[in-house]
Amino acid sequence: MREKDGSGSPLGLPQQWPPPLRSVVSLILNSAFPVFVACGPAMADRGRV
Image (cartoon, rainbow, N blue to C red):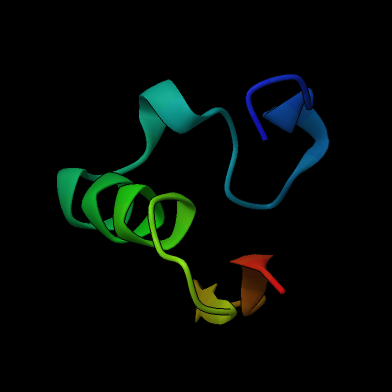
């Protein structure tokens, strides 16, 4: 995910995300299990499946 350019994403760049969303994504990336989360009005997704 770090290598992807998020500027075209509805969520924008990770540096601009609210702290709770950054925390959830950090949990996802460190999980040993498949995880999916949708966020925002467009229900943009980030996951590790």
